[in-house]
Length: 145
Image (cartoon, rainbow, N blue to C red; front, side, top):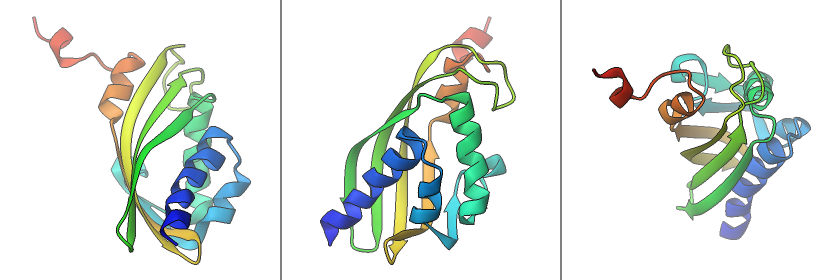
């Protein structure tokens, strides 16, 4: 069972993010599921219908996104994953012009499953680094005289 739960995490990232299979959202995300840390100002996203626009915006900005799961820890109730995403900023879907820059972002996600679907998730990823890499904001060292 632990191997199946760990495989869920890699399947989630591979199907939805790496392959861009939007149908996988409905297959893997429970209707009453909730994801923390992805909505406006880091808020919540509830259900597949609300999660789909987040995926479309991010993949629109970074259509070649590739997420590699580096480590998975399963404690029986929660599954934690440490991951690295590499991608090229090719679209303006995040409200800024495409920079054409190749970026790398790290993050961690925790997931709770029920009947083989995500029912709750928590996400923490390095948005500051992402914004700096696409020149949306200047690193602090460059802001100082």
